[in-house]
Length: 221
Image (cartoon, rainbow, N blue to C red):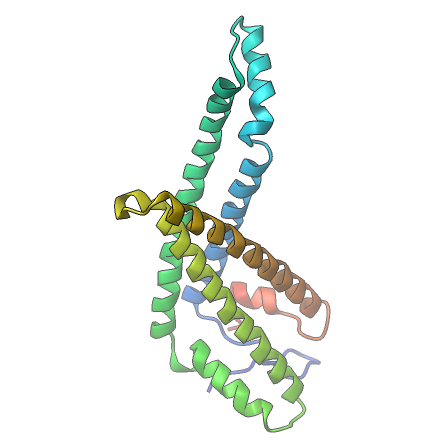
């Protein structure tokens, strides 16, 4: 059975559990890569937006004595956007690798640390109507939301890889457009999850469940 960590002055909580080194490393790596992915999207939709930079390109070239049309200026500014998208794609490859690594980690974890076993234990304990029953029910909801996150992450990776290798796979422009739209829609759900997750951790750390963040650093050993 998964061990529950009890902090001084606190009731035991299902949220304060041991985390293996591999899971902790994975957690912070996926945080870094997803953050990097979001940053590239924000930069391309603001600072490097081609249409917003047409006038800037024309002004800079005019100072050098060169006059270009809107289409020519757009082509130049678009090159910088493409460079950032290339970074986004590389980060996407990293996220795809990490998703595969998470599957491997789940199968190689100790039995009492596997997500499905912890969830199964929480479901059993939540039905006992003990003093921590409400905590276990909340724990179950949180773990189910994590599963939704992994589904979204999987769809993000699949649609991203579909766009990256669409030409090699012979995808039509219509299929590529559909993948692009789906990829963009899924990202909004990912952003919502991240905001809710961070808010939940902050609320917990400032409430009765302290040590979630430190536990993901030191493992709650």
